[in-house]
Image: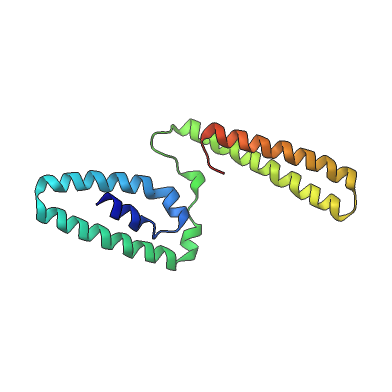
Length: 144
């Protein structure tokens, strides 16, 4: 049943799956175990309600694109991660991403006005910023 449930979670947009799928699967598994103790009819009713609920909600999310963009992953943290370490990780990653964006923008602006020495400088800075971003992501286990 877990495999079917996790396949149905694939109906959600990727940002929702990233934010909620692990917790949804854990809650589903625990609820299913509780229902198994109550017997077959309880399990059947639970599975029908959950499977149709996931389909209904996934379709609703996909039909409301504004809601899909409203998920702010910087405000969510996995339950096993402390609030302090998660905040530090987000701050560090966002800072590294801003540095990459700044250097790239400055390099493009320098190229546009044919300031190639300045463009070379920002190219080198961009390379260092990207490496720092890679290190920060690896440090916190954040995929690229």
